[in-house]
Image 1 (tube, one colour):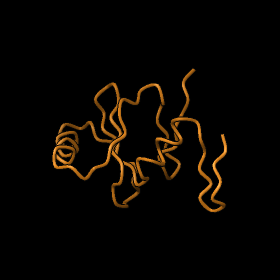
Image 2 (spheres, helix red, strand yellow):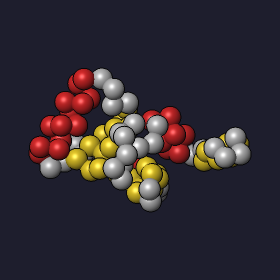
Image 3 (tube, rainbow, N blue to C red):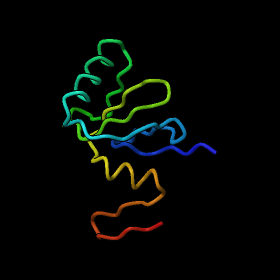
Length: 90
């Protein structure tokens, strides 16, 4: 069954469609984001904030998020991060 993963600011992605969650720091990743933007395949979920994670989907869409890749990965694996309390619940 499909599960939606929160990628920040009320935006969600179908967990079954995610291929990779990666950091945007490497030059090839930045080029991939620019290419996706030029081709109309980029989905911006940053709400104007700095891009900290790039999500690649099965349909070759590229999603940029203001959340850390580790945070998205924890959400993907089923753990919810309560940063204010320093607790992790499953």
